[in-house]
Image (cartoon, one colour):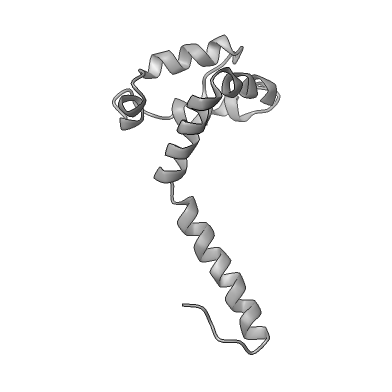
Length: 102
């Protein structure tokens, strides 16, 4: 989530949806002891231990859940998971002589 938020522009709809500016999120990350806010450094578990990311997430669990829901709704993860799942099921069905699922 942190990488997703860092990667947004100031004018991104994410910030208006949650009524907080990008800078407020960046300050929250710093308060959670995340030293560098570059995507590369946050993705590096040596430079940014997961405990620091969890500390930020735990600081407001209700808001964090809303951010995750928004992220999932905006990503195509659901569609790609569904397509991959159907592909695997159809492969199994084909091996057992069962009809394909459209």
